[in-house]
Length: 340
Ligand code: ADP
Ligand code: MG
Image (cartoon, rainbow, N blue to C red):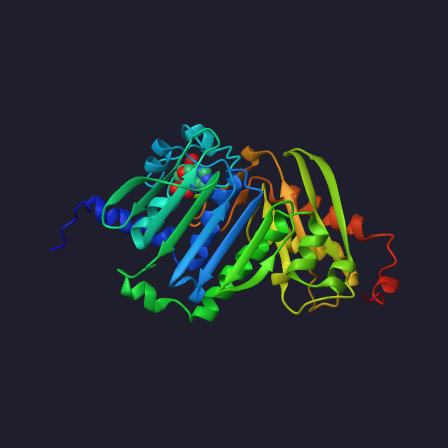
């Protein structure tokens, strides 16, 4: 005979945390999103051993006072939404109040933070217990995560090698660096600076993630499209089709500031290059879409890895048109011979 029972809170929390934080790269994404939501202009990410030993994200955002810092690591605490109607029009990257407590459930978490208005800072440590103490630092927030999945041996064993896990982190950070080119983003792995963007625009960000020849063969674009779904703005950078890749992973997409791999935008971008691409080749492109928040559901995936548009067709058409117009009339063949 089967018995249906209600799970205890600890178990429920662990299950939920396991859905939000599946690998080191999820920790990085959540912490970088928090930094961007805090209006950071500089974000520094330090990773050791693919994130398995240590992950740290430091920002110069607005920080938290002691009371907020102590509350922020608790479940379902957020400063970003107030009620259910806000879930339908999320303007921030976070909104569920789940990231910090989820990380603290599967790792040791230490958060140090200070606001402009407070004299000293605060350190909150969540290990077995939560401790809150004064700590010095400049305005901003640093979150350090160690012992990731140490109490979840099966999850730890299911991860890839440190190199593979770092690959996921590096891709996630590159995506944010390219989609938020006005923020200085630095990624350090085992003591080496792997990526560092100057925060001076898209072309410079491409130069940091790729190289001078690719950045030199790119064009920035921006356009607005009036649709039944409201105004959709599409902007980014397109690398000329003389440079292509065999996989579509170099098409970087973002929706309302959220850098994620979005198929509708990616496919429409490729379609916008039209016959400029051979059939099995893909471009390097950064395409960010901004639309009214009530037109996109961001509450689809526990790790917020996908979104749903209420009008896919409108988004696809806007992107394809924007890309196609940005490339038309350019002497792409001559550009292809440029080298720096
Ligand atoms: P969410 O981002 O969904 O609100 P989190 O658990 O990621 O949930 O964070 C909880 C709260 O902690 C946030 O709403 C925010 O107020 C605060 N917070 C988290 N990280 C930062 C940060 N880097 N700078 C300032 N405030 C932060
Ligand atoms: Mg968050």
